[in-house]
Image (cartoon, rainbow, N blue to C red; front, side, top):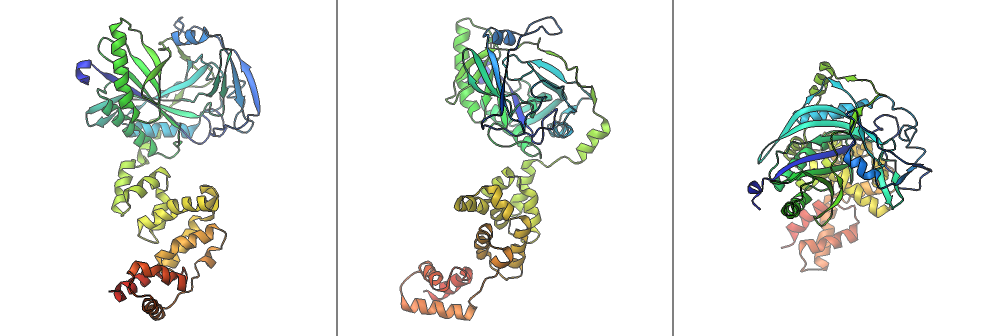
Length: 479
């Protein structure tokens, strides 16, 4: 497609969940899908904004005439989520993370944070509104096709998770409700689907560089605002994977072209489907949906607070990736270390052994294998294979009491319940005896290759044989 000729304009909205506790209470950021402890029913009505107007998206939802059922949990929901208590003090760590994100995206924090109530009538917020606040403005990122401005970065509450929708009611799980959410909105500076994908990936990289960002499927959502020449803006929601933006954008351009040809020029919100097509959700919300939050005070962000955060900004993943590569870590293990947030542990253990690939396998790859083999969770295995236990193994390796080839087997023994100090005690065949034994095996069964003899050596001398030394001897003796 000739995107320039089409007049394609794209803007992105990215919503990233944070970890820790909820935005206005101390409930944990845990999303559950098990049987709830209770249900409540509510019916919401729409009210005019302070401008005296009604939001069209809210009116659309109201016409459906549904009531709402909310399922909650005693240990992770409280009266704040149920809108029976006013919000408590703002989660200060969530604010700090939002400021870190803002600074890494070259944005300018605002002087005063005023939380607003955004009308939400589809039932996804028990109260009928979502609390949201502007944190920073005028950011940007650079892409291969030019600068993409980021006019606003907001901190807001996550919505409840829809689990059932019928003609009479809509049912929500409220364990997700009120988790801190950072919303990043770009300007319509994106002119190709490829640039949209690059923009989403670059902003995602910044988010993943910060501690306290929630990880896993569903923790980040991306919406695409898209228009072509002579057409309205259409918002497409629900992208989990930036790669789908290319196919979906191309299909949406064709759909919009057909609609414009029929004379339709009304903006709308659509849902992104797995096959790249989209489906209608509701009309575009208007401007008449925001009013000030009366339960929360105006919050001042001081210059000193911003400067302190600037001094301690985390390194971007791209910087860390380059540093890990210099340490000799291969690309596959770099991804695992970054995705599992194990950079600090890797750096600690590298003080005992400079083989970065070995350390990465010890803290991520092998524990994952052991979890499957021993039918335990990865977290259980890592609790047993604590950093201190790994240090003991590496100390024995440094003192030549064990060989590198022994490390995985020792770790498996420890994961299976053996004390680490017992697991590292390995009885060795001395080098002279090892050579004699190997020579005898070759004499008994001549004609094999060096690799073929290794199994015979292990079968006779046991798995604790020094495999590296054995292979050196085999390569020398086998012609």
